[in-house]
Length: 236
Image (cartoon, rainbow, N blue to C red; front, side, top):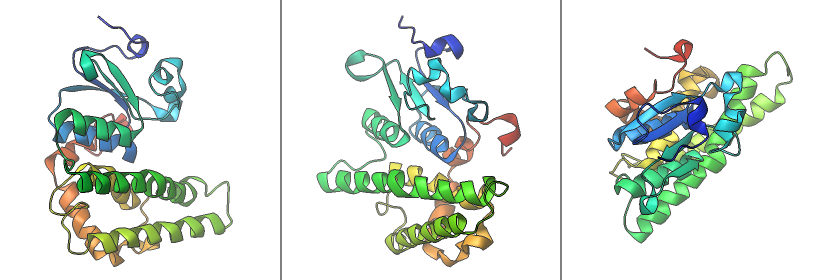
């Protein structure tokens, strides 16, 4: 039986199923959501990033950058275990493993990858920077420039989504996909966690709000919100 270093700190109760190491941040929720939607057996382990558990040697043995989420699959390619970091890479891996929630044709795969990279390269970093200065750095930086800069960029990116979602049920058309799983937690975070509805004028983005409602009412999403939650961050 393979015994990876991370098992020493977070022992697997059932080492034969996927092990998820995460916390219920937007990036963490998206992987729990994929596991739930794909009906994959998994065991969640909460990584308390507020206490720096993501920087421990055990966690960094499968996530060298020290970021959540990370995943260990004992049933990886060619019947060998595999560990993965980076949430979008994990979504792609799980989709390929199950054959679900991503297009199979060439043009569809290209669109899926483009929008995943858009989330990772723009939405995550920019929404995260907005949240940092709007919520966390108020006592460290009282200059309005960084908050205004990232608020403007956040609204610009919401405008990109608004234009793209006009006339579409989901990011890739009529079918829900890993792209929706990737973007939805970040958009929801603007109101549910950052409490920035009024500041960002989120009501302006009609198509985005309609899409967000469709995504967040899914049973898997409701459950994924609280997977790997700390007791004080649970929404239930």
